[in-house]
Image (cartoon, one colour):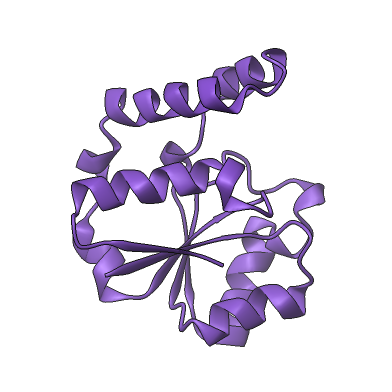
Amino acid sequence: MKIYTIGYTKKSAEEFFGLLERHGIQRVVDVRLKNTSQLAGFTKKDDLEYFLQRVLGADYCHMDFLAPTPDLLKAYRESGEDWDLYERQFCKLLEETDVLSRLDRGFFSEKQCCLLCSEPDAEHCHRRLVAEHLREAWSDVEVVHL
């Protein structure tokens, strides 16, 4: 099973939806804490849900429990954006909140899914950490960053 990830920042709508289409994405799983900000542009919750359905015939789902907490984000900023510390804390959060108990493997295997966040690069984004957490738990997962 493949789980894709994508960030929308620094992408035009054409590039964003084109990537999703080329990779056969059927469901976008939004892992942002907040998905209604004006800064989100075409990826604001209601707009994105509409565009995904109209452009790709794809589903939209918001799983904010896969996002960092406001306190974790604040600590990251106050640390001078120490990514290694943030990564350890976020992975600990995934374990402590037992996110796997809230996820159905079938949900991710019945349709081609893509985790969405804002960061343009997956290397320094929690969506990569979520995808890797799923790969560790569901051994046959291949993670592909768009």
